[in-house]
Length: 224
Image (cartoon, rainbow, N blue to C red):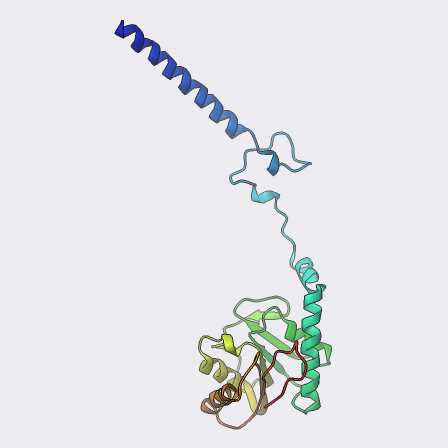
């Protein structure tokens, strides 16, 4: 009697294994509908991931830039920077023939803003490039000769890992008699003094240090 029960259980086990194997094979051969494009052939293979990467469209750089540069946010920021830079032109700190370096330039808002007011020779650098406006370079170790620029500008000194080295590189690349411009979100008098001391410690008072204590998207900033 026990032998008959054991044989029956063995048959049931074999049957269950066969059904499970068949089901698994069918699942592997069937492509999920969510990953099938309308024009995909019926012989589409099972994707390696949830949705095969070959189905994803990668925008070329030109289209990505067009989408970014045509956005409302981009235009507003560029316009605000341009207004700020015109203010500097009025103080005779910036001229159309000035050779400008934008340190930690992000996506390149500053570069476009400088160009829009007539300053053509502008170089933007950032840890991650954003071509064609911004090239890749470490703000703490700039790949430029000494005194290569008339003006160095940054709006991201507060984010620098090593502020003294960051400032030192700005001063190193600016000509004697040139201008270093620093834009801060909101600075108290003591903070502005600390920033000025960074420059003085770095190289001395051989150039103009201009510090704005508000972001360019706000009007009425005061300079020091």
